[in-house]
Amino acid sequence: MIKNKCFLVAFLTITISFSIFGQNLNFSRDIILSTDNEVREIAVLWENYFRHISENNETITSYWADEMSDIVKHAMSSQVPTYRIGNHLTFDIRKLDDTYYEINTLIEFEYEDNSRLVFAIYRVCAKKTNDEFRLYNFFHHRKQQLNSYQIGRINYYYPNSFSFDKERAKKAVVILNDIQKKYRIETDIPITYILAKSLDECNEIIGFRYSRFRSHLKVAGFSIYPPSVILSTRPDHLHELIHALFRPLFPKAPNMLHEGIATFYGGSGGSDYRENLNLLKEFLQDNPNIDLADFYSYDLLINDKFNPFYAVGALIIEHTLSIGDVEKVLELFQYSSMNEAFENVLNVPSSEIHQHIYKLIYKNVKSEN
Image (cartoon, rainbow, N blue to C red; front, top):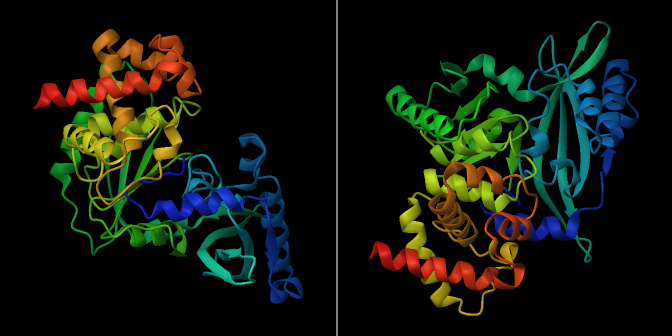
């Protein structure tokens, strides 16, 4: 999936579908002709990392000294690395301070009429360690200027301009811990939780100078994995915390299940699961010809408050809990496709998925009303 927590994602999803043509990195003329040995060394490091981005984590993490590895890589999608979206032009490598260099890169789309669109501008850092340069997240540098607060394995970071409510954060962590115990999940993976007044500001903190992948909504949030990073405008974003719990453990599970369990427990778009279920019924009334078994066809049909893809996923989680409790839900997450999960866990063949979901929607909405 293209991660889309109330973001302007239809544009991104459509663009990605037409614009993935492998890693494509170029350098500006100033960098190519630079006589600065350190700039040239950093350019080679960055180019080598970019070329190997599709390889296994053991290979690509060797380029990083940062304990969090690469935040930018999955800052727009859990499935498609940022580096495979559009054309990338590294236009500037300069000293950020006495210790760090910053590598500034833009993502650009070129269309058939030769028009161009700058989609994002991001930066990562480089620092010399043991006589060779290694890569660092811009956040590694930026967090020195942020306030921090830790609850268990969750580390909150926020600027002075943000009013941090510790009590709301504590209550959300209690709920998360209860869900973790319910599912008997043992994990000590640290979660970095970045807070600001807007998601644009959160993105700036992790290194994006500009991005069209944005949201104006106060309820918006976003989770990045790997590493486990949450961007949000509020400290109790349970939807994103659920992602931070389940994604590291089940990285190959269908995104509908991940969004479903996050919506079931944490709501979506500022509405809880039950509100989303009622909106789902309205969606079906407005789209009577939709094929509910063609899951990703309606992942694009979103508005500011509702995504039917999320709501159907949450409904599947609720139904699975009703017939087999948490063990049955965890069994769903063992499969990499929704069709396999339906067939092997819910005993629903592919030909019957649409009708099965349709009946569940009307059964649950009716029981609520």
